[in-house]
Length: 202
Image (tube, rainbow, N blue to C red; front, side, top):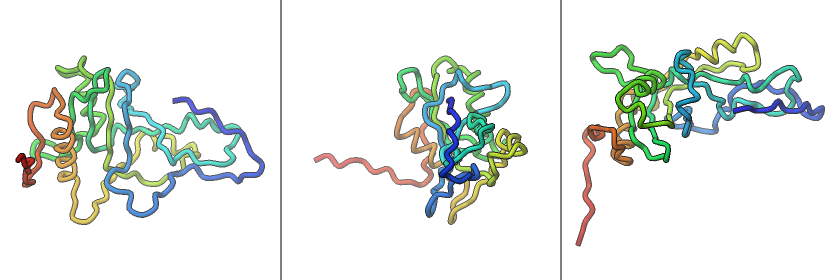
């Protein structure tokens, strides 16, 4: 996405290009991307580059500052994702980050997508959406030293109440699988102890 630099406005003050804090509880989903194209991802560089809304700032921007550089790498995010075919039909739903006995910390969204890119269904999807549960530490996007941090941010899961990342990942993945019934998901969603309610038919 190309975003042209804003023209300077003498009536507006300079602003720091940092994330705008949401009012109240921001919920469990901290970042998300919809219908990203698989062919635009820099897989070898391990980069899922995006321009997060609310981080662009507003007002007068320095004339020598290119806002197109405001790219952030979401490869290391953890959450859930959906794969689509060319017709936007969901074909697979999964999670990234679930810690199991045979995994150390779980895989990130970028790792899981890259695995699907090379897997048996690699030609069955071309677009994807993702929903991340990890927050990132604040930093000023306008300073040069932060460019490296945007491409290698420190992600942190901030628990809310009695929640934990494993439970969230399993629950959201189950909702996607049961709600969309993607054709490439071989098993049903892990709804734990949730009770299935059948519709009453008179």
